[in-house]
Amino acid sequence: MKSVYSLVLSDDVVEKVDELAFKAGVSRSQFINDVLASRVGVDTERKVLQDIFDEVSGYVDGFSDMRVQRRQQSAFDFLSALNYKYSPRVTYSVDLFGGSTLTGELKIALRTTNPILISITENFFNDFIDVEKRFGHGGEYSVRDGKLIRKLDFSNLKGKSVSAAITDYVRSLDDLFNLYVECFGDGEKVVLFEKYQKVKDKMNI
Image (tube, rainbow, N blue to C red; front, side, top):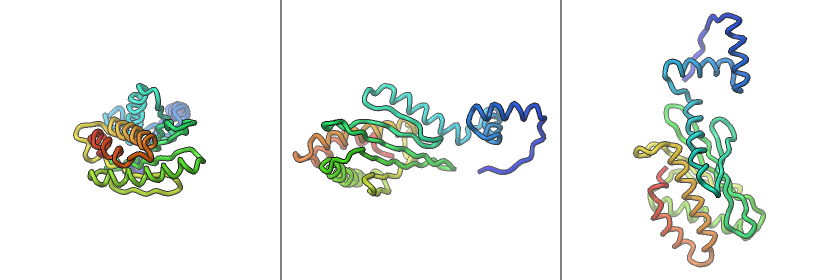
């Protein structure tokens, strides 16, 4: 929650504040809010989201086959490649929504025009949703425009940080996707179910 307050500041202070706010890429109000929050020991939504991204980046730095990039303050993408012929790119886009309770949304998209791979991907999305529901994970799902969209719930992390939970989930999901494609046509649903059982503790968000 934010409210409007009036402050009486000297022109010299405002000039310096504006200079620093411009360098930080934020508004004057946001900069003052951040400085005051830091001073009184309050974590702003902006800082919480920044900390999550920084921690996620630290985790992903240890992976040779995945990287993460920020799209905006509350959104970032995990970039991976599918083990299929020309290694098409897979993007796991995470959008976080602040407020009294942090929630999120994950979008999975594969960059390809190959009709066979598009069909395999659609099958994976549907089978993955079915497996998640059978294990009581996840909540709201939709598949549209070639993307799987899943709501993220961080209310049951059992001591794990949000950043670790997101990274574990995306990393495990990427492994499941690759395994499914590799086994397609040879019991891929059974393989998906068996592999999910092994990583289910990392999928509970």
